[in-house]
Length: 194
Ligand SMILES: Cc1cc2nc3c(=O)[nH]c(=O)nc-3n(C[C@H](O)[C@H](O)[C@H](O)COP(=O)(O)O)c2cc1C
Image 1 (tube, rainbow, N blue to C red):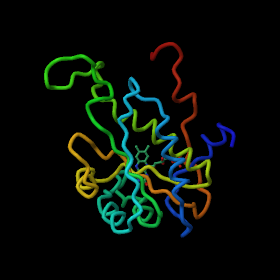
Image 2: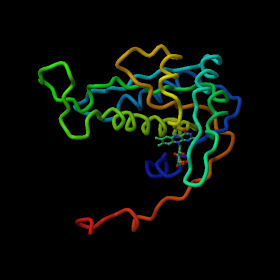
Image 3: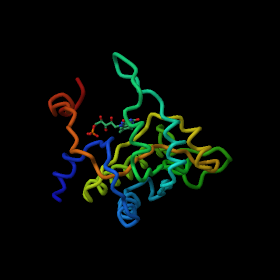
Image 4: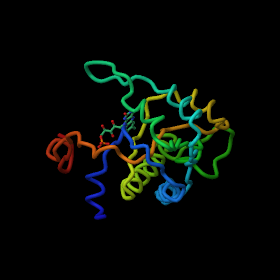
């Protein structure tokens, strides 16, 4: 698959066929995640691969509503959480991405004024994973609107780690329709903001 084709034709998929997804396909997705760039190669990501129907149902119950500019709706990925044969919970070890090495004291010191870069590094891994799924004819959606503390309890996530996103993975029921993107003229600035 051509790189630009993959970048532009990957879609969030929320409806899946009953077809299974095998361990090899999941491993390829996890491999793609593990090769993402990260702050000082700290690789803060950890992946929980959930196939257990009961655990998927419990995770689905943590999904929150989504606030749109004009209304609040149920999370559109709710059914995806149980319909997908696999949900990957992407977790982060906190306090290492963006941390200043060699610092003394017990509070983590960060190298930049942006603090912990874990959300950024996780996002890089997740985009790789979405593309690796798409490249294998599978569909995924990033689920960010959920109660992470509840999900951490369900998954027995140890202290010092956060669940950042949940990604159901399955065979798409139908090709997704692309939501519109802003034109480059709206988002690119020449030299400086005026
Ligand atoms: C950080 C983040 C959180 C998201 N959370 C949700 C979510 O909770 N539920 C959902 O259905 N989609 C969620 N999405 C998917 C977006 O709605 C989707 O990527 C966007 O509408 C663009 O569509 P596309 O992925 O098909 O290009 C999330 C995406 C991102 C990047």
